[in-house]
Length: 142
Image 1: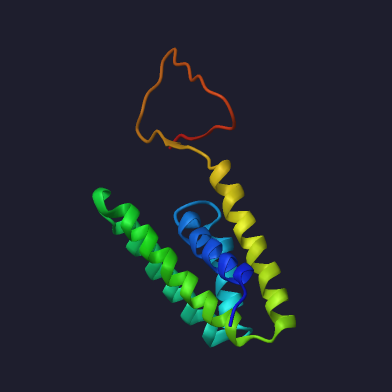
Image 2 (image 1 turned 180 degrees about the vertical axis):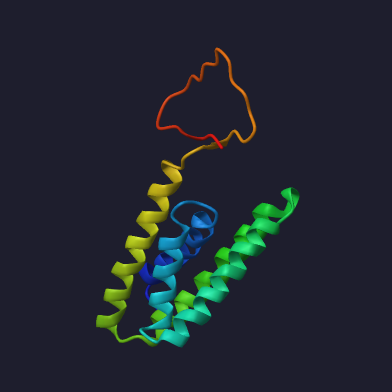
């Protein structure tokens, strides 16, 4: 039986998986979740990476009107997977995994706060142009 803190951690991590999908943090969060759930087994990590890729694809394909519902469902899927893992681990391993999961949550949250805007100006011509804004801006001119 998991304690309330572990349940909350699993829920927050499920949300972080969904939050990170499609952002610059995705590869790091994806890899971290796969390592945690794969528990050091290469085949297990590959299976988790495939599951995470399916989650990302489902989130990306969600229609505008159902996006929030799909996000909630996917977060619940990952929450359940993490709850099962934590439940199976001895207490000292639970603490180690909890620290790893918290680091992934923090990474996803940091990416969400500072998520960059990407502008792609392929085939464009500019004369006497000005860009105004604040923060860091990355423009791609091809």
